[in-house]
Image 1 (tube, rainbow, N blue to C red):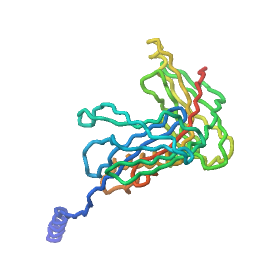
Image 2 (tube, helix red, strand yellow; image 1 turned 120 degrees about the vertical axis):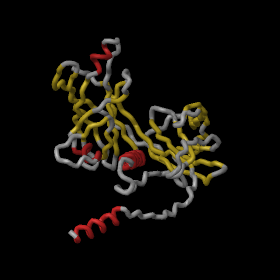
Image 3 (cartoon, rainbow, N blue to C red; image 1 turned 135 degrees about the vertical axis):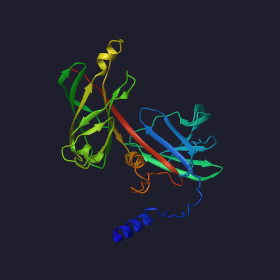
Image 4 (spheres, rainbow, N blue to C red; image 1 turned 120 degrees about the horizontal axis):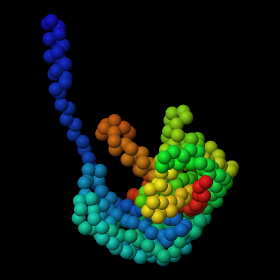
Length: 305
């Protein structure tokens, strides 16, 4: 009995101990945050904001007096035009959002670079090479099953991968519905590997798949995806034609790396503060943060049986 009391008292002493750790956190040095994804079907645009510290709860504050020069293959095209719009921030307050536009579409294969100047910051620079468009070929669309208000389809498509490191984004779009993008599933090894699915036989499931060509570099690649159509019943009653558009996008390595690191960062937010490894979000902005990426998109309207 005496030993038990000693053990109980000793355990309670340890259970009630608090350890105070003093953290020496240096003051955050603000830098420019540049976010710009160039697409061959849209004009060049960018957003620029001030960075905030890890423990700063303030909303994003956009920069409205920067000078942004655009270069194509080293030749100056000109300066971006600044455009302002009003929007509500996270606190419900009305705030100004600034976007910089240049009235020209980027061209596949060209190198685009930004040089950004602001009186309060060090000069910022970034560049990206717009990847070549990959031609999407839909081989067949099969109705696998139908029950009640749901149809299960399988799509097989293919494309030719160039003999170099390439990166892709796959989406299934609904342009005439509220959702915008549809979930799909795939057991393709390249998609599963890039998505980080570990268990054998597990499928990828989501509305956007990012993958590389490590498993099929320089060859013709065929992929199958499954999706479920439950919207046609509801929307056709309202006179809306439901369309499914397969979208294959060739993306720059900077975009691919940035999105994957950003997802890992957000996934880690669910962890206990000391449970997971910190995730460094990728940036290719010299003297700043953010990303300058690029992409070329090819789409195909699916003809459903």
